[in-house]
Image (cartoon, rainbow, N blue to C red):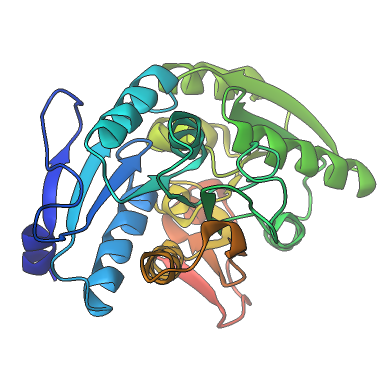
Length: 320
């Protein structure tokens, strides 16, 4: 598969200073610009599974122009989107909400298909899930918050107060946190918040909550995910569990999640793109909200903070 991906990918770069392939060539070749918010395991998996599924669908001559942004820095993301527009790519795949916002604001003509936008309506990407309108639609990784907090109670029933760590600048995170607050209040639980502006703020934000909370919760926040090992170490040192919105955050030291399988999301996004390249109108293509979830626990983290995993059902994946 790696060999196929190397053949298929036209350019992979973190910076935005390199020139790349232009749009549709004289021979009719299709170019898809892939705007990824940042380099991160979950986002990388979406991109890789998207390309793999596109190849499986027969798009072996498509040029994939992949460029990473730097977190939620909208200036960089917008600059990349502008390069894609200038190169007249045939379609933009925007991975994560900030990338989608940048792409959607840059063009009203080129189809923009987002992947892993947790709340595309709140982010202003589409007016509704069923009728996306204009040139923007995609796949959503909306969190199953009730299932996450049910799982948290199953693993640590003593929790009364959650520490909410997230980037106030990520619209997707703010929407998830607001929903989480409502749910926690309904359940008679309390919370305290610590917001960050960049990955360098995550350690101090987590430390500020130690001694005041019984557990942490962070949604699919890309900024916090990038600093997950540091965040996890603060929690482990304090003997506190972290419940997350993404499986990669558990693999990086969080305790548990009920989250999206991003390989499935990437493949579903590819099938949507295939339909649009085949002539389907973006405005008539509803947003797909993923419904397949994984329950995953980090065994090493559980052992480190004294969480007993005995008695969990076979449906729970225990890592490693």
